[in-house]
Every structure is written in structure tokens, then in C-alpha cells.
Length: 196
Image 1 (cartoon, rainbow, N blue to C red):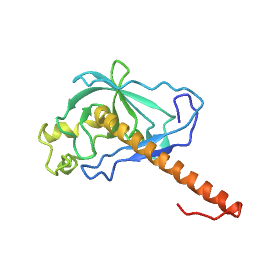
Image 2 (cartoon, rainbow, N blue to C red; image 1 turned 90 degrees about the horizontal axis):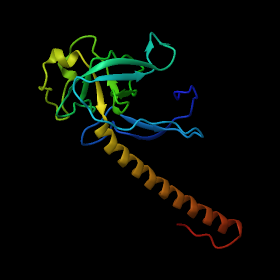
Image 3 (cartoon, one colour; image 1 turned 90 degrees about the vertical axis):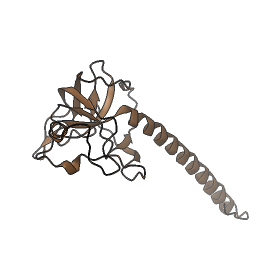
């Protein structure tokens, strides 16, 4: 659903949960529309800045009337992302349904994508680096007191990679379709069929 209430079919561009380097809790989707939607620019991260976390919260299986926005404070940015790419800690109470929503700074710039809310109980195993070691930049009680987002610098690098990969795949598919069309025309005209 777009911010104007229009609903579009989402298409998968790429997912990153199976990356060898380290998996990310991230999927890129796109939709096609005749409407020219505004997209926030990528921005910078400043500790202790007011930020807004958006999403479509669901409680007890019930949608809470569409898109909601929660103001919070950006508390920390780890020097190394945790497993799944989480690196920005903020004070918003992210709940089910808000994963994938934007984290916007006070200049209306996208600085991250929401993903991991505050836990119901503290479990140190949740806070690990991709190499498997426990996060040691902040005390466990501080880590557990925050919701976590994937920063735009990770997203920006992956977006370029995903778009290029998708573009290359589309070109390959177009070439393959052209070859199939040519071969089909040969068969229809009783010409000597060729296989490419």
C-alpha cells in the first residue's frame, strides 16, 4: 500500500537472507505505477537525533488502521553490523508489522529500515556479529532496550547490486525470448528449425 492508499502488486527484486558473506534480514520489492511517488533521499546518521519509525503495525492479528509513525531517539550505531545487518539502535517500540518500514531523520531523509524490535525477554544470543561472536560495543541491557534498523549505507550498496543483477537477468531473458521467437517463426514457416 502506498501512502495515498493505493494498493499495488509487489514484485521481488532481490532477497539477501542467503548471502554467503553474511545474511541480511532484507528483501527488495518494487511495484509499477502511473503515479510519480516521492521517495526520501538517503541521509546521514547522528547520535541522539530525533527519528521517526514508520510501518503497518498489527496487534493480535488486527491491522491498526494503516501506516503509523513513532517518534524516537537514535541511541547508537554499532561500528560493525550485527547478524542480519542491524546496526542502528533507537528507542521506538517497533512491533509486528513495522519491519521493513522506514527510519527517517529530522531532515526527512531515509537513514534505515526497521527490522528488530525490543525483545520480550533478554537473550544474549540475539546480539551477535556475523562471525558468531557476541556484540560487545554496548552492555546487553542497553542492546535489549533498543529497536534495531539496517542502515542505508548497507542498503545503498545492495540496491545497486540488485538492480544491476536484475537488469542483467532481464537482458538475458529478452535475448532468450528473442531466440525462442526466431525459432518459433522458423517452425511456423516450415523452415529448417534451429536450436540456440
